Length: 335
Image (cartoon, rainbow, N blue to C red):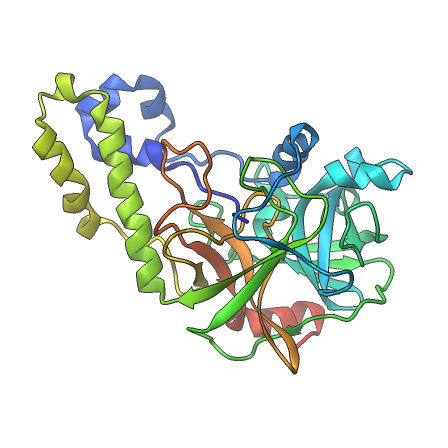
């Protein structure tokens, strides 16, 4: 599984190339620095309606009731009385942290720069198959006051349900975990670009943020090479100079991850999370139960890739829950 991908760096790369490059891309110059609409509500539901089932990258089917805290966020405008309408209405995931509180990503709850209305989203609990489960209306939506839609920092939000769920909530970590094996679950985009009907899981490892930063910067450097390669004649640049450009720029790049984020995945990109998984839980598993460590937030893939998922050194980035225990407690009364 792969998570929502931030695909705005093409414009930033053009800015790095200087005024000559911007002149070659006038449309990009006008929009430099802008970030496209991140809200998965319409984008993912539309993609679901066109998708076919197939195998998720590195994902496995879950057993009925295996992860009772996993919830699906459904766009109310795509729902009718039939349970089958739930299949194409899902746009994000979340986790039940109390009978009437759901934890998710802020970018799942924001559209056009403002929080979505509580009436536009329905929370589905107790579902492994998306055509099952119980629907809950939402009473209140809380988006972190420091949410940054450009850096995707403080990508965390809460939803209070009008009716209490009966499923068992997940425990939240109190420790700032830096390594170990973790699991991510969701109904996100699969290997062929389709979406699953049944909940999938993928197991992976936590990595230091420095590893994630290094891998993403390497992708950015390759993207610069890709963008400029189409204009190598105009820039009178040799192939050797082009090959050296990406690595030369990497040390000058700021770190994509902040301390509020945690990095997970596999070096070969075999296991990750994708569109539709956003907002879902990243958690550790033991005989004592599941403990949520992160929230599916964002990730990167090469600009020239057919799928923004499953790429070498393109680790997934998750909201680091340990940084928000006080915020969650203050707003939802959950520790």
